[in-house]
Amino acid sequence: MTLLRAATRPRFLVSAWPWRGIAYTTTTAVAAVLLWLALAAPVAPLALGVAVLRAGRWAGGSVAGAAALGLLGVGLLALAGPRLALAVAGVERWRLRLADDAPAPARRRGGLYTDPATWRAVAYLVLLGVAAPVWLGALALVGLLVASTPVAVYHRVAIMDSIGNVAGRAALGLLLVPILLYLVAALGGAHAALARLLLCGEPDPASAELVEVTRSRARLADAFDAERHRIERDLHDIAQQRLASLTMQLGLAKLDLPSGSPAADAVGSAHEHAKTLMVELRDLIRGISPRTLRELGLRAAVEELAAASPLRVRVDADPGRFAPAVETVAYAAVSEALANAVKHAGAAAMTVTVTAMPAGRRRRLSGPSGLGSAGSAGSADGDRSAGRRLAVEVRDDGRGGADPARGSGLTGLADRAAAAGGRLLISSPPGGPTILRVELPCAS
Image (cartoon, rainbow, N blue to C red):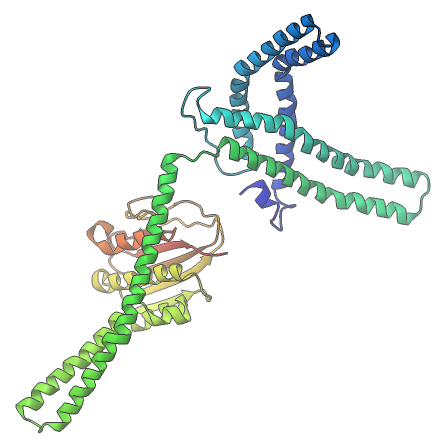
């Protein structure tokens, strides 16, 4: 969260952000004053050289003296300017915590004069010394206007002015207070954004590679889902229709053959096998890309899974639709948990909960096993998300002891959750119960 973004929220005035904006603006003014005091030594020879040159009216001696003073000032700026800029940049990175919750690490890759970070710090020095006094002065004028309003109201009351004029001035003062707070947030937030762009604008190579890997993994997951839909469509439109036609022809051929003949028995057996294959193909298509999930949403698809399961399954799911990628991963998690409970856990009952959680809410799972966002063993806490999250939790009463290292189903599911920006958590102590939880980011 940044100061600029916080100013767009409805509860900005009752949060801590106005005070953080005031603190950042105040420290910016102090930093600008201290900067000009620090620049007094190198700037003074330059100003004195200009004064000498103007007083001497371009005489030979005055030109030489002004040139000497100018060279002295430039030399002092060249020696002290970059070091001062880096020192100010360090202080600014610390101050940015008032206006921005994101970290502001220092990234240096060379010497004092060859490192690009040095010259970005010098650019920020110019911003702090030239641009900051301008917007701070405008803000001070508005602040003086707000502060002078109670004085004007008291003066009007003292001279027995009309109640309407006094009330109008008092209302104007109250109206200007939130405007001043929003102005502080806007100007201070813009200054902080420029500071972050200059002081933290160069991306870390490792972070850039990690972002690209994450994006490529998401693209692969999307391509995989698209391929699943294509396979499901081909099986439904081509293979299933042809198999249905074959089953019908075998049924008609069986009617034309004498009952009890070897040919009739062979055709009848082939007809039964074709009908069985039809059922298996229908189940296969439903598992690849459930039509209920696409048309009716996650809740209906989970209820359909529960109805088809041999276990007693209780479903508690929030209504509503989510992004297709989120619903696909959530459905796969429930399907995998149901299959594992039937095959390995010896469970008799299960509970499936699907909840859309607000931002920042987390839940800890206790147990020996855990799959993080990358599919490896990790903490059950994970990272906090800035937006809402869809939480899918499946709990069974089986024997427990589920180990992700012994099978590829949970590991693959963790990879799919990570590709969608989420995480998979599992708790399965010996003796049970087994709790599988998938948290996925969803639109707020």
